[in-house]
Image (cartoon, rainbow over all chains, first blue to last red; front, side, top):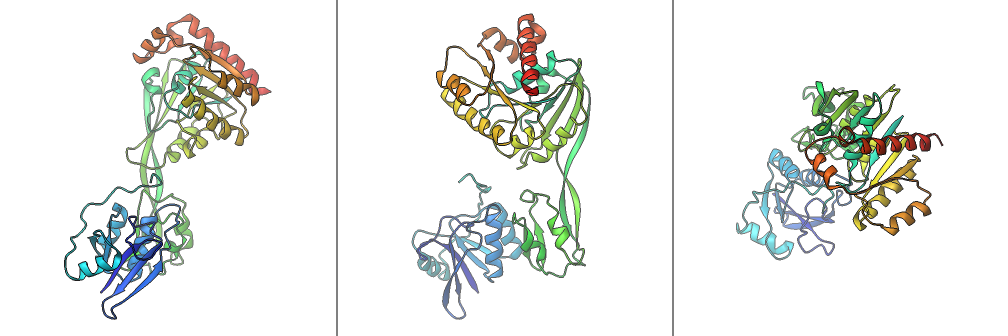
Amino acid sequence: MKIAIPVDENKEAVCVSFGRAPYFLIYDDKTETSEIKPNPAANAEGGAGLKAAQFVVDAGATVLITVRCGQNAADVFKAAETKIFKAQDGDAQKNLLAMLEGKLSELTSFHAGFHGRA
Amino acid sequence: MRVAVLSGKGGTGKTFVSVNLASVAQNATYLDCDVEEPNGQLFLKPEKVSTLPVTVPLPAFDGEKCTGCRKCVDFCHFNALVFVRNQPMVFAEVCHSCGGCTLVCPEGAVKESLREVGCVKEGVAGDVRVVTGILNLGEVSAVPVIKAVLQKSKNERGLTVIDCPPGSGCSVMESVSQADYCVLVAEPTAFGFHNLKMVHKLVRLLQKPCGIVINKANGEYPLLNQFCAETNTPLLLRIPYDAKVAERTAAGQVAVLQEAAMAEIFRNLLTQIRKEAVQ
């Protein structure tokens, strides 16, 4: 199982934005290693959430931990059967542990997208 | 002659000026390009209305032919396509209908279907031909509907008045694209002035001749007069605020059809626009 988490410039804190996060942390539970990969959608003109979702799906992640997520990206994850969990306060590592211990709840509400408004 | 009426700020009187201008000209065409709030029809009340749907192409994928090469997904600049579980998924409201995916597919697996985004209504009100663009609720881009409305002005001999949307973005740019002259309606307020400067910059960039109409012009707003002088933009008309006119307008009446004095004001405005436009 691979887990994806959007992270900030410092590569540790969970980024509040999913589509425009500068990096993604990808954790592989087989090797118990994490990789930091740049988000190709960070500076997309439009459709950043969709492009980031494509990146997460292509990275082979079956779990996403995020603060929030737009409806379009959520539709991609539904089709890809990727589970989405709501990130808690604290950095990515802490959230990763919480997830592995079954302490995170699934994210069930999605916003309509900001589309240049935020 | 095609005259676009725009303002930047909403509620300054674009529709008021457009409707009255079209009503004093003989055999004019009124095009409502404010497709998110097409209010001109509330005043003109067109009859014998016919409706045409406006559609945009949307890709549809043939699962049999698709080999999953992802060329379409990689090509889409708008990220409207996502490749999931060995097939492309399309996000209709993100798609800009450019047709690129159809072109780059080496397997001929992409066909274009049509998606309705709004409609164009056409009718008559006295001697005015009234064309109204209506964008469906929830649609992101007004441009396809505006394009369909503007199609209706082609080969027009008389006056065509283009009632533009507020702002200075894509939909306004599209609305003024075919105009021979632009009338900028402004309120003598700081907010009105700020947005006037934005649309003025836009029409100058598009190299359209323009003039300014100050609506609700009670008292002077020196910065506005100064701006007209500095930018060499003619001040075509000042319409003072009149509670009676406002009341009639709120009741859906056309001012020039009610009052001879108003008709005279707008006839003079039209004469002046004609003079300015040929210079």
